[in-house]
Image (cartoon, rainbow, N blue to C red; front, side, top):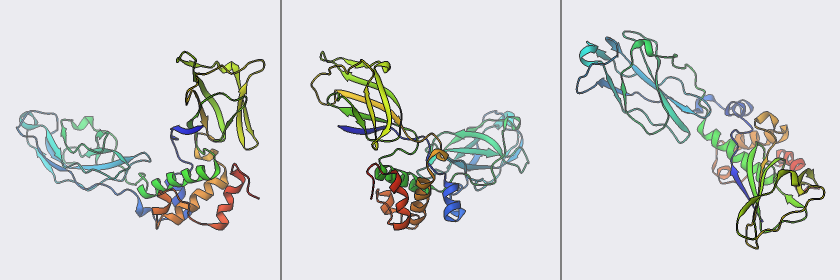
Length: 309
């Protein structure tokens, strides 16, 4: 029997902001804003749409959590006659850390001092951009606050959630798992709790073809004796699979819900405590080892699949 994760959860039980508030961690630890981009009139000269006048640029980093505040402002570049040379070449666009998923570029209108959205770069590798946008095509203003989160805390939250899941045998945020068996049993025990739904039951038949069991032919019994159980529906029976390893694959969704608020308070508190304790020395938690917190560790007891006396 093999239990394997298919899809990681799309969110975590706690946000960086919640952990920082709980742990009283300084907000200066967030993903820093980027440095300045290099700007110059495009070469060779060509007509373009950037309006005549002086323009300045800046960049921000974006992460799954949000966006940094405005970065360092560039030197000014002046378009004297856009019918002759109306494009601006940006280079040296800063690359962020491991959690940065993209960058945003902002620019002033001619002679202006407010930075407005010029373009979104949906990666963390591109370092050049050719600006050919008129002032009227610029978007929203650059952010003044950092919502990108602390990269270390983001990793620690994920690590603490995974450790909690291993310790309790429970998926906290909804995720997809597969149970792989060599054959059907009368009742099939599913160890990862809580099971929200069965996505599919597939098997390799005696001719070697992959088949799907009709959902009406089986019943999921919610948590019973610290496991969930899958069994045939009334007057139904499991089909006969081929005698090979991994002939049966049961895919299911497990977790308390899609949002952190659905996770029991004891588990969220334990994760917060782990992140707070590990933030100064993260190596152990990032390696999958919980920090020893004797009192707070009891918070997991109620949720462990094997009861602790």
